[in-house]
Length: 108
Image (cartoon, rainbow, N blue to C red; front, side, top):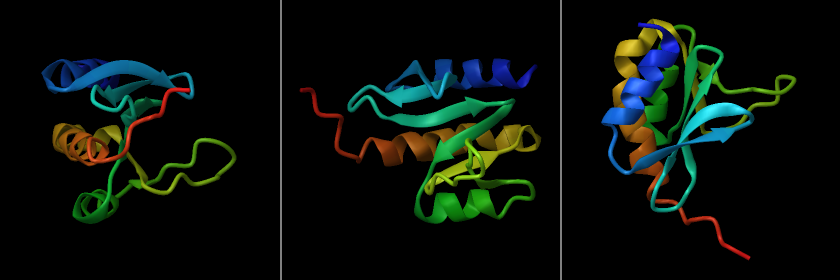
């Protein structure tokens, strides 16, 4: 299975999310507050993590804080390479659980 196929499979199995776009890339947003939790970026997954889950992800070789534009880091977003595809579902769950606790986007 390709990295993108894994992304779609995880999206289908995860409850309480919807597919969307962020930075022109595929992402998964929580239904309760419409905030992105997971981003599919150049055959890698990027997860919005905190605490133990973030530390766990960053302990893996090749993972790093996500820096999509000119090396500017997005704190709290961790890029996990395809090498760890077997960990993607658990990181997705952790990211979704975390993002569900955040305040939603306010409509004007």
